[in-house]
Image 1 (spheres, rainbow, N blue to C red):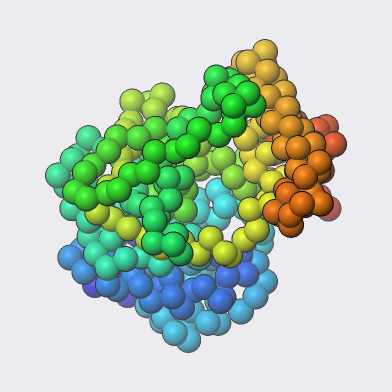
Image 2: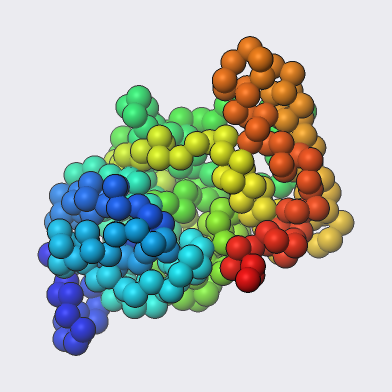
Length: 323
């Protein structure tokens, strides 16, 4: 049952089972499906939905009209994924916090299954589910590994390893990290870790969170029965802007979490991978649009490493610091 959307909180509203946090960025076209699916995804627990728009479209008006039970917080500008979720979390009433991307659709009972698992396996601090694509197949990216020098070197030399698909079923699988667009964290653990690091604007903030979780002795798990659909068509994987922020985020992750020699070595490998992809795709660009888009996407990162190699401390890398 959804919580009241009024400003005054009653004692019973101070503690709910789940707070669903949705940070949008001009996501109006996805929100009806995203938020509309919540009711069938969680029916056995108390819950609320909180939303903030980091963009400038009509998302707030749409939600207010269609979903009056949702708590729409005043926008604080395009502050990034980490800061947006931290902002919502500070106003949340739930014992668990679910980070949910707006271009997703929860399957029926998906959140009931996560919360049931939380009761049955109290050793886990963060839980996530299986992301399904348009082809009806599970996306292996829901199950992440924390990056390292060794993993980057492997990508450079032999390419990305074929990720193991997790078919699901009733299995609960311990993992290093989960996709930040569908992860449910215990609120006390979230608060102890300080939420997401707002030094990240976009990408790799969840890797940093799970690195800190692991260092603190926490555990995360993937729940096979809990599923969500993600509209992978909502963005271009070879968008130069996407690749730029992804690269900046990963460089920031290494500089923040490791000593300088190791961090710089990892950043050099990131550059070498980008350069290899750019040069290889450029040679084959005339053969297909796929290679042409890859070449255009990786070109700026490969040719201008000084614009990203220090992470969000690189000159011009963080849009929040540009006046």
